[in-house]
Length: 342
Image 1 (cartoon, one colour):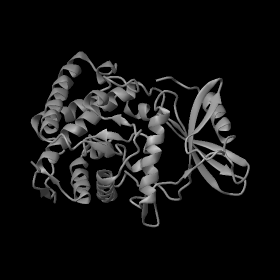
Image 2 (spheres, one colour):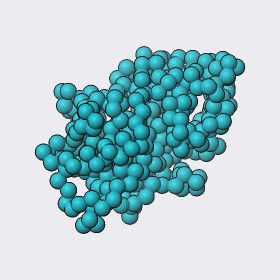
Image 3 (cartoon, one colour):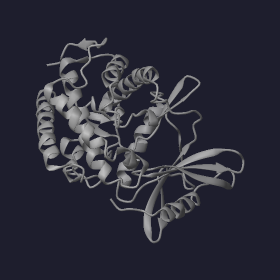
Image 4 (cartoon, helix red, strand yellow):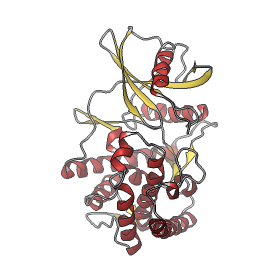
């Protein structure tokens, strides 16, 4: 993925804002997130606030971004879930195209939503939040079953090859992480192979269970205010296994002891699954973990990378061993199974 220096992001936000009819002059811009994209909170002189997402060149195509925005618009219009409104640019386009140093760039402006993300430091509160995330995931999955997407709707497919970085320039395969020693690689190869067999069998049995999902419903992408939850960041939405939304919600915390309780809470909120879906959950969480081992190597210098260095790979090997023993992320705490659809 092409890197962008901080001064180039700063120039980009100024150029992007020039294409919007703002309610007042800009008072301040604050970079609040920098990963695949850069997200700015923009304070205006009339005390209003907006949020601008600047897209990293090459990460998502204009068609992919417009497709994401079409799903957000449908969810808002049909009152399925709460998600920030998209603010059109000066010519009425939801996706704003502008130029920096002769190169096309893209931005999306959203309304600012009051509130805060749920804490992950309190296990009891986190368990409650995962029940809420499960319920939100069910609402999104139900919507997709009946929604008629635009004919040119295009999003990534979260296939095993894409997840593992084999057909994806956005992150590297986990094997290329320098923390993965030869011995660790041999162990993770076995883990990966077991997960792939599990998912292949599921796909053969249920080819219809592969649809549009959010994929990144972590607590950091939720805003809670006065008892209401707003969903952020549909930038990774795409076509995948339904339980991939659970795996995505557990990103970065897959090795924590609370995981079985989080899985149980998510499933209670979701409303129950059948035995075949349940069987994919450990495999999908492990696949997400392997993805992030490769992802971290392409995000050097970020706060996430600094927290993962020296810790994430050894913990991956540990929970991978649990996965092979059939003891990872197991839960029977109030999980309700539906009969499998044959």
